[in-house]
Image (cartoon, rainbow, N blue to C red; front, side):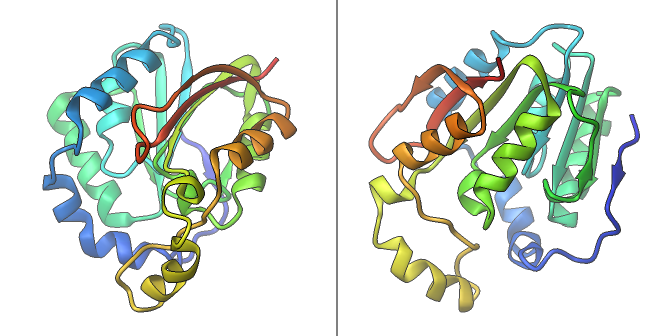
Amino acid sequence: MNVMTTPLKRHPDARFWDRIARRYAAKPVPDQAVYAQKLAKTAGYLKPTDRVLEIGCGTGTTALHHAGRVARVLAADISPRMIEIARGKAVESGAANVEFLVAGPRDLQLAAGSQDVVMAHSILHLLPDVEAVIQQVHQWLKPGGVFVSSTPCLGDSVPWFKVVGPLGHFLGLLPRLTVFTASQLLDWLQGAGFELEERWLPGPRSGLYLIMRKP
């Protein structure tokens, strides 16, 4: 299940996530019921033969949850400490079909059309190059493949983050944040060639859950 990556230097945003990795892993999911519904919705699109990629996997909880339903899961995150925790969870759970990598989405060298499903949960708003990553995801997916994402669209819920976010990031109090609306996100996805399969917004400040299909 090995995958090539570009030669890695420490990602400039990894420091923030390394620092909070242990607290992040110990912190309960804010809304367990909503998370469970998202897991169930995603599971409905998975098949035993699927090859699944998760970008921004954090400590691996979602990747490991779905591992038993698919052939293979490749999960990547820029934080070495997050990946260390994820690998420990994989050993504890006995999941042999999951590979965790320290890598950002732009570091991965995957063949075009090699993935059945790509997941990106609570990560797109943390990327400086959202449109480029979406286009890359489209390239990785097979025709008929699905892109599953859950994304806080800060431009709708807290548009003032566009002003305070950079300051918080400079002070080390916040991660890098990209502020965009749900409408902008859908425009980028559809502009890349995706078709909307399912859309769900659990609450006004919740992440927008999307299933997008590559025709």
